[in-house]
Length: 102
Image (tube, rainbow, N blue to C red):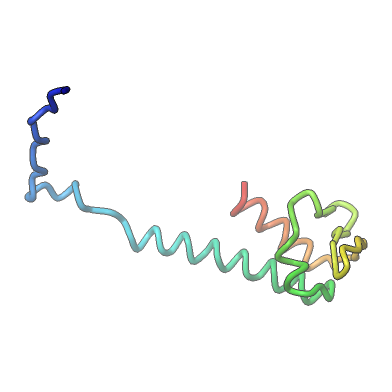
């Protein structure tokens, strides 16, 4: 039967201020900003294109043709269609990809 080590790790010093100092406010602010950019892009896309929410949420990056201004959508009955997207929505999508996804 193998012998298990009995050494225990040393306890963390409770008086070290750097140990537990996570910048949660800064982290929350970055998450909130990213979520706001994402939400704006999604709402602009929905408004500009008339997509159903389920269609918009099912999009992949490969479905976006930002240069040509179209989105390839798989809709009800697994039918594929190309949907034109307005310039404001395209700008919001570009910003989301540039600032949040990349």
